[in-house]
Structure formats: C-alpha cells, structure tokens
Image 1 (spheres, one colour):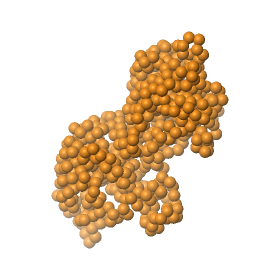
Image 2 (cartoon, rainbow, N blue to C red):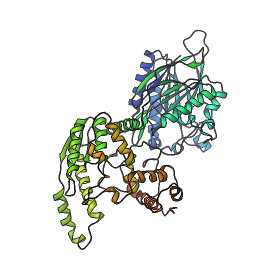
Image 3 (cartoon, rainbow, N blue to C red):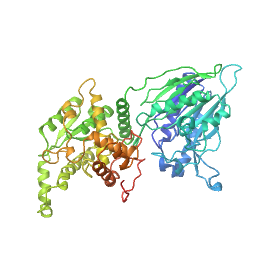
Image 4 (tube, rainbow, N blue to C red):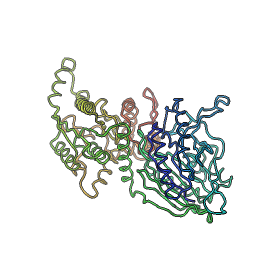
Length: 562
C-alpha cells in the first residue's frame, strides 16, 4: 500500500485556500498510486490558530469546509485531515468545548474522527486553553488493492502524542503513552500528524525518538510535519518515516512544501525505503534556512513584498540584510544609511560594500542636522545636565522615526536588527533601533551572529570582512565600544545561556568559574529589560527559549537574584 505525505504550508485562518492545497495534494497522491494521504496537524486551519478558536463561526466554517472537501477528494483515496471539532459533551461534563482532531475521509465521506490525546502547555504551546484531550486510542483499518490481503490497521497520533515515551526520555510528562496503547491494540503502522516548530537540533531529537520507539515496539512510524512560518514560529517540515528496525525509510526536504510517497509492504509488515533527503550539515545552515523561510512567510502572509532596514555597517544589520535579500529578492530590499557625526568612516564604507555585495537598493540620510534640531529644542530642559544615555538614544530614535516614515510611505516591512544578547540585557533603544514589524535575529546571540556570518562567507564574501573583525559598537558617542558597557560577548552569551536556557542561579553560574559581580550585573539587566522586550516586534524563534510567545516573565517584580 502506497502512502503519501503532504508537507503543507497553511496560512492560519485561510480555510478555503488551505482546503484547496489539501485537494491538490490528494490529486497528486492518486496520480502516484497512493491509497492514503497524510496531512499535518490542523492542516485545514493552520497551526497555531490561537484565539481564532474562540470564534464560533470560525469553527462552523471549518466543519463546512471538511464536508465540502470530503465530496471533492478522489473516491479511491483515504485522507487524514487536521482540523477542530466541537465537543458535544463539553457543557454536561465540564470539559473544554473543542478537540484538536483528525478527520478520516474515505469514499468521499467523513468516516471517523480522532482526537489528540496529549495537549502540550509549555513553551509556545497553550492547547489546554482551547482543547479537551482525547480519551481513546485512535486507529482505523484500510484495505489495500492487493487481492486477498488483509486490511492494514493504522494507528493515528497527533504531534505531542509521540513525545511521552518514558523508555526514551526516562520519565513520563503525561499519564498516558498513546503509542504504547496503540501497540496493545495490535496496529500494523503508526502515523503521526504534526505541527512541530523548529528549534536548533530538533530534527535530530525527533528522529532519535521515533527510531527508538519504532525499534522498541517493532512497529513502523510515519511522521508528517507542517512547514512554513507563522508569526514568530518557523515550521521546518522534515517529515520522515522509520522502519520497524529503527531505520530512516523516507525523509522529505526541509523548509519547503513537498509530497512524497512511501510503500508499506504487507508481506514484510514494514515500510520500504523511499526518497531520503540529506540532513543539513551544520547548525548554521539550519538557522539560515529557518530565518529565510520565517521572514519570507511572515512578509507574504502579512501582505508585504518589500522590506526596509537601517544599515549601520555593523554585523547585525549586515546579517539581516543578507537574510532579507535571500528571502524576498535583492530588488525588494531597501537599506537606509543614516550616519551621524559619531559614525566612523569605515562604518559607512562597510555598509556601502555590503550593499554592493548583496545588490540591494540603498539611500543615505545624514542625521547630523536633525540631531542639532533636537538638541536646540531640548536645550531649555536639558541645560545644566551632563550628556548621557538620553542624548545617545536620540540618535537611535531619529533613525527609528525616519525608517518608520519610509516604511509607512511606501508600504514596506521594517525589519528590526537587534540580536538576542542585546534584547536580553536591554542594550537597545525603545522607539529607536527596536522599531519594526519583525525582529529577524532577536533569537540569535551575538556569538551566533558572528558564526552565521562566517558560515555565509564560506565560499565568497557576502558580509564584508571588516564587519566581522572590527569590535562591535553602537557609535552613539566618540570611540564607543559595546564592551565599555558589557563583558566580552563570549562571556556574556555564556552567562545568558545559563540564566535563560538552563535556568541556573547566580550561585550555580559563579561555581562554573564566572565572576560574581559580572553575573549579578547581567542577571539584573535581564530582569530590568523586561519592559523593553514586551514592546518589541515579534521575533523569529530558533531556540527552545526565545523572547516571544513562550517567554512569560512579569515586568513589575522583585525577584531575589541569588
């Protein structure tokens, strides 16, 4: 029996368009001889739909579209479609009103409905807010075209349902283990319909986990994942299948839509090897592919075709410009150079070299006269005070205003260029360099920005060499360097990793050999900068702890730092 995997890129809420893509995939699947088509979790509405699920008409429209889709798909193809289904027992039982469900369409009718059993509520996931957990194992039988062959018993799981195997993790996060339950029901094959967002190294974890489960339970598994960017989340696709021996039988190309077919051999009760795409070789290649996809989809799904950003001649804006040129096309990127009296000559020349390397459009707007106008206007209030942060930040806010004006005038998407290290400690200016519709690299620590630029230059110079080797500086006052205010970035990022990702205390970090006063200073800066992060544009998530949907820290707090 041939089974098709549709690695789709849905637009959240665009129900009719998403249904059309499922229909097209169904026709292709039939052309390739498939008997069953798998689509991702919530493939009809897109994941995550968030509070669109509170809209009753949205839920009704989903069901109407499912019914219409069932009538259109080829008669000799079974299709598993991810959608939302009402819980008819909600009010009587005190349960949530919806299920995260999979619809089985067979013979152009809705034959069965399966509900997701494990509902994640960590990081970016908040499914318990909307859904009731399914209580029963999900499986169905499907007859093949082979004469006298028995029907195949197929177990259905949804994303998180496969992430609770205590044999792999060494613990259980939930009470139930759906794959273990399906094995007890004697299924021949397990399919998983997912919307699993990208983070660095996650594909290796997925494959290791399912290899272990397939080998341990002696059952083949097919994993189908959503692809594309939705707000801050990036879905990498990378759908794959694992044989009962724990070997990869199929892997789609990541970061793009795809339809692949794999054969289930009923005699051997296993999957035959099909197309196996190569994994990306480095984390930098993963990150680059993710950020390009995330920016491309954010722009297109929000109705933007062109982007604008400020070019300082620094490494952050250089990297964002390179990502934008790749995602949107060099002709659709406008870089604005805004030198001040404090800008070094090499910063201007480095920015110009970058523009030439990328082939993007550029414009220079010197802000010296504007700075004088601000100084004159504020002189009555600022007289008899020392030059300080307020005056430094005026430059950034002037630039932010100019960028916003151009973005508004021409309908461009303004890209913020701050990195994670800066966002963590507040080394950024509200209503200045934080202005924008998308923060492209806000989940990349400064050290990762450097490594990504070096990777990008592996074959030819994209980022000017001088940009990479010169000491970072905001250039808001004479001879300013980032390390005047912050420890070296390798030290800073190591401390931030322990504070943010590993949740270590100051005592634990100091025990690792870091200076006590430095750690205390960084911890205090992270806490104090929370109000800035709450006002930042959405940032593309590439780690397991990003300053976005999954980051839920209070602003007004007096936590004891120890």
